[in-house]
Image (cartoon, rainbow, N blue to C red; front, side, top):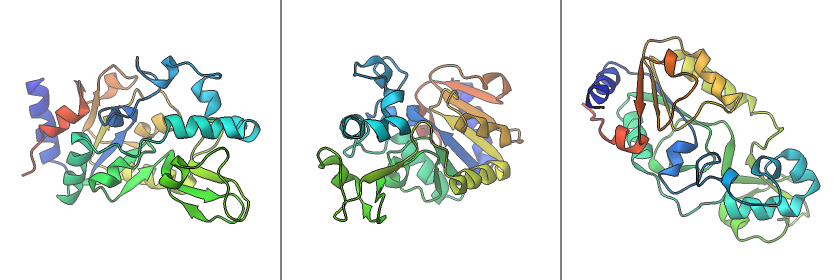
Length: 241
């Protein structure tokens, strides 16, 4: 691990347009469960599987059940950024990191201080009336009951990408451009099995591809450096010069 950390430090020292691409494993260290781990949502019991309850069709046909699940399992508003979030913000402030591309919807990168964040799957902190488009924050959604309605009568829908929905094209284009221009791509806290997000690694053509994850990923054999372990602990060891 020490030699790997030294190699990671050297790569970061030599880079000036780093892009970080992260998944649920980044936020699990802040106490937010993922779907696939032992304690994740797939291993908990509900009337329907999580991927069904978080689908567009379930939102349309079982709207009240959707919001009950959403409030119970998607809103962790007391969560705080961990060492990984903080180090990435520091790298951006130091002019080393150009963008964060995240599959997470919790807003912890911004809470840590990151500015240029591409949220592929949206954010729980943005909620809009489907009729008049009035904005509502996450606190409003957390304390709502049943199906949340706007004062105009419209349903308030979270600005998150549900199963069966496409990614926001402007966000996706921005993420692709950032990765294409990167001189280093760090992928962390993701198993790289959720598409189309996982395919973004294919837009990187540089020679500093780093994978940090607790388990193996389909891209390990293509990486220039693979580190297994806690992404917070690993990134916390990086020093800024």
